[in-house]
Length: 187
Figure: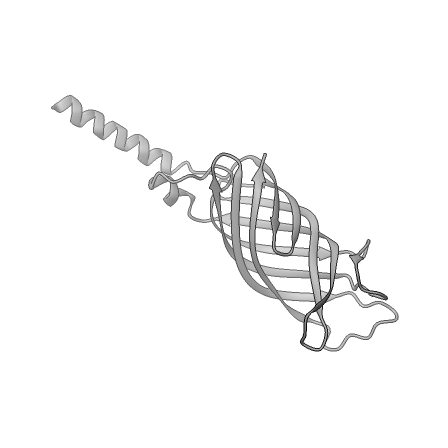
C-alpha cells in the first residue's frame, strides 16, 4: 500500500512539474481559410507563452449597391504581423488538454497591411486604397486530430488609409473590426 501511495505521489509531482513547463512550439507553419480569404502563416516562439505570427494571404471583400444584392467581390493581398500571448497553456496542461500547435486561448495585437500591389475583382474602375490596421484581439485556437486546426477571434482597433492623389477621404481614421473564424492545416 505504501508503494502505491508513493507511486501516486511521484506521478502527481511529475504532472504538476509538467504543467509548469507548458510552452508554445518553437515554430509552426500552416494554411488557413475562412469566410473572407485564404492565408499562409508561421508562428515563431519568442518566450514560453508568446509567439510571433507572420502571415501572408488574400483577403476577400464584397460590395453591395443600394442595400440590395451583392454586386461585386475583390481579392487583395494582405500582410500580417501579430504577437500572441497564449495565457492559458499551463491550465490546459494541468487538465490534460492539448497545447501542441499552440492550441490555447490568446490575446494579440494584430497589425495588418493591405498593399496596393494588385486586386482581383469583377468591378470596373475600382481604385483600391492601401491601409494598415492595429487591432487588439482575443481568440482561441484548437486542434482537430494531428494536423487540422480551427481558430476564432474578435477585436476592435484602429484603421488608417493611405491617401492617393486623386482620392478624397472623409474622416480618415476609422475603426477596424477583426472578427474571424478559420479552419486550417498545420504542417
